[in-house]
Image (cartoon, rainbow, N blue to C red):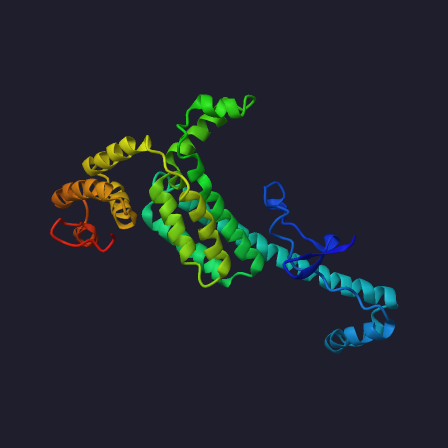
Length: 308
């Protein structure tokens, strides 16, 4: 097959290696185009002799063990295959770690606790910073997929909605899609903001910054007036909740909104929390942590907000 170029690298189609567990995914042929390409064998016998000199010195006298050039070529191929297998196993292990971290990030707070979610975010950042270009692309791709659920925020997810999209779908699986849409962290505003903050911590790589600018362009273009009343009702309800997750969401909204009316409504909800933290059944250290965080966020009318 003829070679083609991928981001400045010459790649042959017959050298592209795919990880088996990824072949069915939508990105199977997208991110692995630069995965380890075996070196081509030398064209001449002289070059072959020079190529094998280190092997000759380490393994002893090849002439006593090999029966000719064919055996030498087989030995080189064996070494190349072993290296490829080792690299493939390594990338599969990394992919597994990324998938586990994305799972923990998406299934907070229903299936995993806050500590597991935080560790997953740290793990994704570490994998990205230490990984090669292929690994970096995969981390960005999966974070992009998780963040992109905001495109469906206007949809109320019910069984009939998923049935219309997949008429032949198994009823049990369709109900599962409803549960995932309701309870997944990345289908909420606070979850989307958390993912954005994770992307921002990936380092100085321009790709991460470009991913953020891509989503900013789309988020900034969406404003639906009919959602304001529902949004305000949810803010009020979060102020009445006893779940510390509700408090975390409110503090996140307060830090990022420029809407004066919304900010005042959030302030009322946070003032409710300020009065009831001490009544919560939590360790004293955790209460202290929540109080300090809330103190930094609460905006009083006599103070100038650092977020305006």
